[in-house]
Image (tube, rainbow, N blue to C red; front, side, top):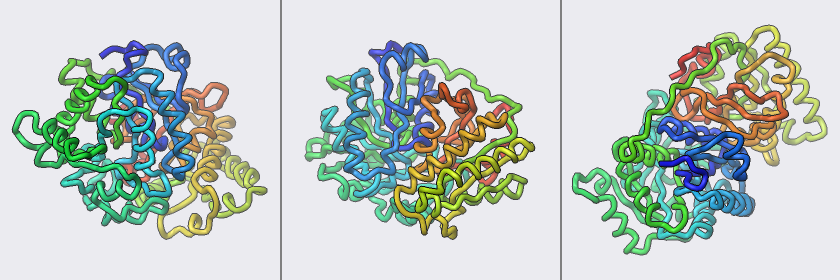
Length: 458
């Protein structure tokens, strides 16, 4: 492994900000110096400002886009990543694989990536056992709450993801799910091949599927040791490729390759990372509709957090009053922060909340920018130095409104949601500690633990 800019190990494009910090975490924990950018970097920005990197990512926003918008966004991003010469390019999606033919189409991303990168096939890996995500005989399963002890459900029977407000998962077989979004044939390296004690069983199964005409190959996985075997196959395929190997999946891609690289290249352990202790008070801005986040909000309010409930419908339907509503909420939040109170600004309290059901228009962008704008004003007018952004669909827009250009992992906290340091030149967010949390991430005391400011957040 080398950190020379022309020999990058991996570059990824994440379809939202929360998922992108998930990939950042697992690369950093694998011992790779990694930075996450909000826009595809040019060489000078990536390597002069941050020094030599082993990997980098781009926190995109394609999760909330229709295919016609995704194509332009992804062509530009994938071409920019290709120019920097990584061995692997990964289109990073949520580990629940939620998408649809009309919003956040993973099939559309595969088509664009295959067009730009070529290659024999596109590997797809969704299973991430460390996050409670499993794929068996092509069917996907997910635990309720990443980092929790929630029950595991087939994804089309999952109490949250089967009812997702924009991309409900009504099909557990990921081959059939993808067939709605792309015309490319999907093959499967199933759990019997992956778990087989026979040498080269995964490689042989891959060649079998390619021989049957597959141009997309899905890999099952049930245990973390399965990822290392898959990582070995992906590494070997990249070594044979003229250009980067393009893959699609959850942060399991980073886990799989990282496990192989640690085993085969004797990489040093990741450096110890620490967060500051004296960070109170905490600001949380939440655009999440998840019942997991709702329970976390309830726990935080019971612990004394100040609640600021935004009128999501009015923010979306009444642009003429939007700035006034944002300013009012920001002033309220700043007063409470100044008084030493932890503050939680939210647009939804789960499926029983009617605020989002009456909203119209580009909800994710409007609410994300509103939440980011509130946080930016609070940071400019208080001593607050730690912020949580909750909600996958809104997170990318909130980060942009905050003026964030890049983040580096600072410390582990909850699986898939590290605490990061923000780089935001010219913004009050520069240098803050920030945590991006997907709707399904964390235990009920998530926000309370982050507000505690403990130095060791593992």
